[in-house]
Length: 186
Image (cartoon, rainbow, N blue to C red; front, top):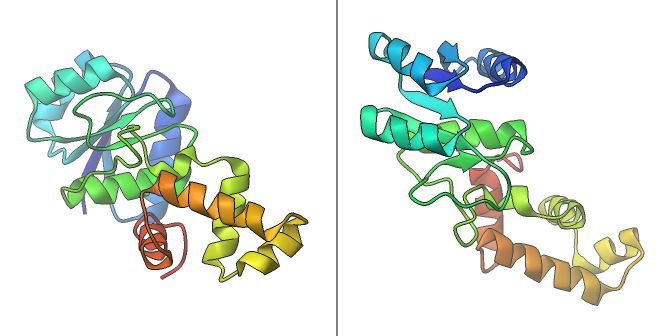
């Protein structure tokens, strides 16, 4: 169980993360602030394991001031921040936040697909996500093509493209990626 602290200018975002953490029940939200300066006054008195924050400046400040506290950065898709190991987008899924928390606790990177600074599956197009979901459900190329009323070659191209974006080379590594990132049931 980890103690989570959230820094975000928007109360609705902080409320959403609080609700998520409480719903999951694996971790505890021990505090929140709307800016880094306020957080730095509170965090030393708390047993904080993970800070989720929304600014690059804040990330760098936390890195300098409290280097032992793990950090997760909220950022825009496709925007790369150097040295950030754990990042998710506010447009991403609830599972991406939970995946980032688990990754930071296990001292793993949650940065995929050519250093984009966010989980690779968050950068897939809607069609790629749809096809990924069908593949993970055991769909075959020809059946997916039939269901979507496109050619099998089109589905093969989408499959290849999404696998490249996810940084996987075969169906087994695709399934491992999906399980690791909470995209399918184990």
